[in-house]
Image (cartoon, rainbow, N blue to C red; front, side, top):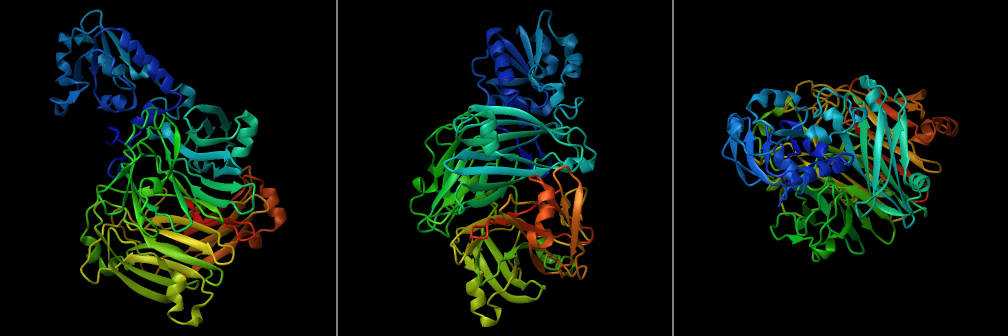
Length: 636
């Protein structure tokens, strides 16, 4: 059963009430407030903004003696909250309670509106008694604004020879933010606090790094596996904390990466691969809330099946648990796929795959429950050309194998009608295949190397990119939420990496249903600003830039790669051109020499900027000995 909280709606965007109530700094204050209410005798509840249900979901409220529940909206009458039928607040004068608990923030005006209705001697208590201190707020005038809760969770580990390194930049500065600071709290596997601290960011586009080895040494935590909670304060422009996360080890073979979690917990996630022979797939169940995940609340099922294996273990508040998926689904094997019943208890979770060669990390994606097929997508024709495109690198085939696994990512996707296209680096199509109507429970993983081998030896060593698009030739339907997992394997070392993403429309001057998306401002998004972190020596950074176009766009990109040092100063730049429909595999050590990279510092990064087209990027690291990582980049 899902947690009764509102997190994200594609119509309204993100909800920050659950973030406000579940903030680690607020949790002890709220528990004191609720404990005091338990001792006061009968309590009347005034719930003007439907916050009481979320509060009850996150905290134990059963011991509070509630006499009445009042609401402001007539539409909320005849509901049951805390076991009481709701009444109009106009009936407040009849309460026999000693205390009125106004379940709202910024409640002074609400109390003023009803003050004359309160019987004499009734005390008012509000959520303002348990709010963040003013220095933790971006906007003090409106508490439940999303910019006050620019928060996120990070899978964070320093144990058994494995380490994590978070890297990002003060991208809020370019929107006018000043005095941006990070408040951080580290939780261990049991959900206990290991450390908390603040970092002040320079008033510039400076990069920043949080390394698990340094945290462990600074706070003497000992080995840990758990979560790092980040709250960015005084931000502008974005209420999401974006980051790249590298997983590295004491041995040279451990190298993997992922990126920021989706900050809003979901009912369902999908795109979790079943293990191949010799693999162990571990799903990291990480509780995002101050309430326990009860036993049998997290479940796994084969995609397309209703037979669910439930985790019969509770997870402590802010705790973590490594779930071997084979314990719940022992018969499943790659390329079968797993659906996660998450119950809104965790933000987008990570999974790890262990083999005899390496350990790699990736994330699943939010499975939407609100989508239905949109017949207009098939009728748009030349207005949008190819329409939705899901692009991914085709790594050089003489060294790497590229595998594509389409992943259903909506409960309404009973089939996927897809066409696969392969282009060389100059944008010339070298292969096309209709995949037909893949059923929801399909297990079709395609090796690009094998497909290209079927069309002749002239493409051996090909390097370019893959596109998945919708295939409307047989009357099929689509919903604009096309996803796939892309797996890469070094044919020499056996080291592997994987990433997943969804489709978008690219480089269209017209718009349709918020596409082409823009990182800042309304659509269409027709420019590029991507963050590319630098690897710590001796690791080298690779970047794969793809220029997808739903219709023919500018013949070539005009793309600047600017090296920015740890203080936010631009110290060097290189320009490249990418043909429309083409791609480029870039090794950063070939663009910027060792002296420049050393000047950039440990938190230096590269900004990929193009004013004339929207590029899609992937980034990774390589150690030159067969270990590599690969994931898609984030923009700001």
